[in-house]
Length: 251
Image (cartoon, rainbow, N blue to C red):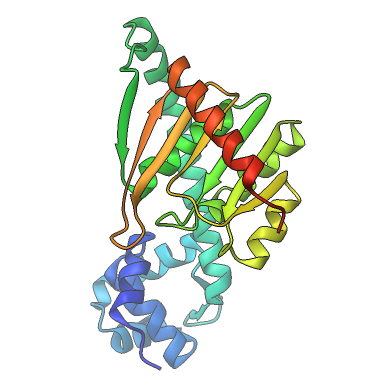
């Protein structure tokens, strides 16, 4: 079965070079090979093949049999992808810690903490980052209302919600009736969940004082979020959530 260009792009996005992709796919198709044979099968210049194979070995995509000449075996894709995932996550966490350690003090020293009472956030990943920030700041209560965000928001946040529940945060989640059975079952183990026939928006209220309102069209997927810690807006959002909550029912 031919590997699609989409899969090749995915492999490139996670850190493999074009030569590495060509060699690994060649090994999958043709089986264990010597460097010379892999060079011919993959169309990689012989002058580059040892560097490519050494890199693939270091990244966890091939293993070497110490024969004469050496033979190179492709590792199972699931094993190779998992090794790459762990490497990416480790590198990301290290870089985030390094950047946060220097940038946060700079932010604080310049008194840049003052922000508008309400600010607008666009883009799925930016919205999710804002929600995660609110979740991580929650100490006592968390209220979530969701209709049908552009990504399966609740599924993405299940791990975060688990940590909050274990920390003793009171969680209330309101969903519409079209939420999947498996998602609803998992949410029910994290807090009090109710179903509302219809909702015209979604959002998060953290400790009754930090608010994120998600607005947008389910048809166009053009979503944005309004974020605020203004006491008046937080109070209004909290009261409206309670109003909807009292009308909602357990599934």
